[in-house]
Amino acid sequence: MVVANPDFVDRLRTGAVLNEADRQTYFGGGAQGYIDYPVPDKAL
Image 1 (cartoon, helix red, strand yellow):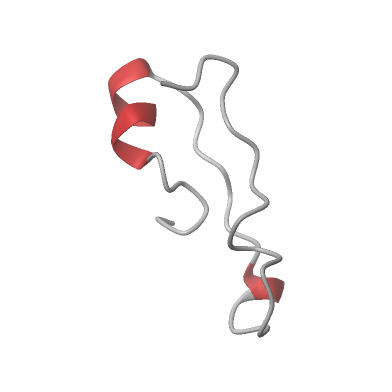
Image 2 (spheres, one colour):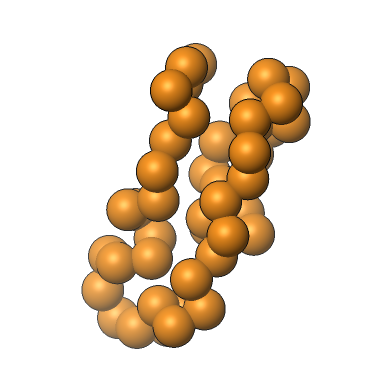
């Protein structure tokens, strides 16, 4: 869950929705699934 939500603490603090992890990209060897999750509109 933390990989999908690197801003986890801020999301909890602001009540933002958590991203679902894309299990198909786990251990895929590339950046997809690690750096391409959406961020909330009001990123801190």
